Every structure is written in C-alpha cells, then in structure tokens.
Length: 491
Image (cartoon, rainbow, N blue to C red):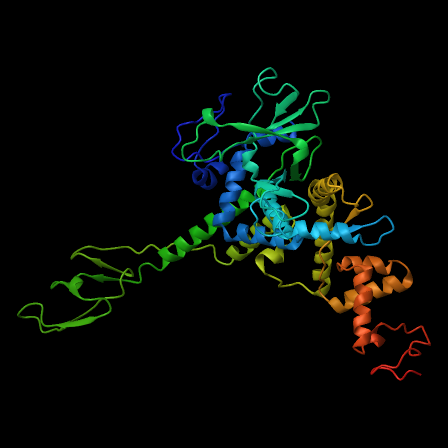
C-alpha cells in the first residue's frame, strides 16, 4: 500500500488496513495478500489493492532491470501523436497550426519539455499506475504564448482511491463519491469532480487526519486509462498481472547466484599443522623444518586464496557438501517468465529479452504487424479520445474565446511513422496500393507525417536541384517534355 514512512497511522476511516512499507510489500506481502476470489465491479475489486499494486509497480520499475526496460520499450514504441489542424476540405489551417505549435513547444505548467515529453510522461504513468492525469490551467503570468493554456501533470496516487466522500450535506451536495471521483446526482455515472490530495500524501509526517482534498471539476481533468470492464473508472497498472513473474525471476536469479557461490566457496581443505599455518599470507607456500627432533621429513604448507579454503584444528574432520544448481533448466524457465511479462504489457518478447534466436524474416514481420495493430488500437481507444481530443478541444475553445478566426479549424491526429523490417519493401507496397487505387496518396503522405503542401514544396526543391525525374510517372510518355535540366534531355 502507500508507503507511510515511520507513520503510526494504520487504518482508514472505515477500519481498513492501508499502509505498510512499500519495500516490504513489494518483496514479501504480494505473494500472500489478496488471494481470495471476489465478485464485484472493476473499481471495487481494484480499490482493495490499488495503492498496494501501484506501490509495488513503481518499486519494481525502479529496482528491476526487466521492468525498467519494459517501461522504456512501452513508451518508445508508442511514441507521440502529432496534431495537424486542417479545414473541412482537408487543407492546412496556417493560423491554428501556428498557434498550436507555439503552445506545443512548452505546454506544461512546470515548463519541462514539449508536447512529446508530456505524452511520454503520460505513457510512463499509465504503465506504472494504470492511469495518468492532467489538469487544464489558464496561466497568463510569464507566459509569452498567445493561447495561455498550460497543463499540470498529476501523479495517479494523488487521486485518493479509497475516498468515498464525507456525506452529501457536508462537502459534495451534487453527487455521490466513490473511488475518489464524485459523480453527478442524476445518473451517478458522469464524473463531476476529481478529489485530489492537496499535498503529497506519502510524506514523512503525513497522517490520515490532516490530508486535505481538493475537488477539481471534471471538465478541467484529462484522465487517461484503459477501460476493460463496463463502468470502470480507475486504471490498473500494466505490470499488475506479471508482478509475481518479476518477483520469481528475482528470487530465482538470487538463489542461483547463491547456489553457485556456495558450490565454489570451498575449493580444498587443509588440516591445520602445528606451527601456525594460519599465519601464512594468502597464496604463499612455506617450507618448515622437522616438526620434532626425530622427524626426518620436511613439511611444505600451502595457503589458498582467501574465502576458498577451510582450515581445521588438529583432530577435526570436515565433510564437504556442495549444492547443485538447476542446470540447463534455468534458461528455459527465465524465458517462460519473460514471455509472461511481455504478454501482460503487450510488447513482443524479443524486444524485452533481445533474443531473436529461432526467428526468421517472416515471423518478425508477423510479430511487428500484430504489435502495430495493438498500438493503433491503443491510439484509437485511449490516447486520442482520453488525451489529445480533449486537449485540442480545450485549446480551440480558448482560441475562439480570444477572438482568433479559427472556427473552421479541426484537429487531425497523425500517428508516428512506422519503420518495418524492410523499408524498401514497405515503400514498394505503399506505391502498389496507390497505383491500384486501394489507398490515396494523401494517406501515404499523412502516415509519414507530411502534408500535401510540404510534399509539393519538396518536389519543387528537388526539381531545381536536377532530381525531378525521380517523380516522373513511367506511364507518361511525355515525362521528359518539360524544361531541360541536368538530368533530362528535354526531348
């Protein structure tokens, strides 16, 4: 659960145990807690351990290299979607695009990064906490942008998942509060307020009694999460279903290292001789004289490297016991665990492990195609409707309110460019689709992030440089009947 360091507060107002050290929870309690099967709505099931899971997921991302790499792969593979403002006839809207680009260059309240940075932050939050939050703010002071919109990113833990409200007559007379969200009174299904902690709620001196919550109107909030069940309003961390696998890998690797270390800890046993062999320095040999007057033998004593030799006292005997490791099964078991994690977070196994053994060209293309379908699915059901659509809509509202002539501007969302296994074959396939009429050329341009105007400008530039023949149609017999260039005869 949420980590209250040195806090004596152990229960919420309803008597439920909430707080325990995050590290202990991540390393031990997860394997024993919340084992019972319950039937309830998605939020109620999640609320019993949502803070617990989030704490574990953030802990494992910080401390487990596999989880950390998976998060980075998740963010990188999704990339950032661009917003292109156009008119109804599909032409670029210069003024609105100029205003948006100005805002997009520094949209955050804290001034960190640009719009791509903000999208990457949201992706990382959704990976670790299952959801991401942003708040629209109007900031005019020290803001040179013509549209004074700023976005404040809020960590998911700030929305109190256990908060059920303080009663209609006290604080929220307009609806019912559950899971930190106040819903409207009429339907009890439309969010009206999001109740965030005013201050960071896992501070050193925090107690349950002094936590102030601020109800923020829902129309000022961006709430990004994947709804997997009807009427679900809280997100589930992507690593939730694979936490056991991550802990198993940690335990397995730790046990294997300890076993191998133990197996090689004792290399030889030497009976302690009279005369103080322990006084020899590591790695030395000592030739001593006779042990007693009538002894005709000369004793040669050795001392091995430190930590790998056991000396016994005179008369003691020692029995060597060396444990065995799991042998070749280790690699197979680790691969199975990595596959569990990859399946849970919808990332190809080889991207996490780096293992492409046994894979050919066709299988890699098939995996990438499936992966691309999944990411585009996420774009269409989460990223665009939950984040970019409300963001661009609020931006336009403010621009119109400030009397900018942008009523005829509409946002279009441009996916990041996909790079396949063989770019040449991908390009040839695109051209065949265009020639056959299956795909308009504008769709191909849009997929690569360019507008018609930019393409035409590029063609003019290349024509002036003498490379215009590259764009000539082979079906046109008059392709060279234009002005002579260094690459044509003009015939």
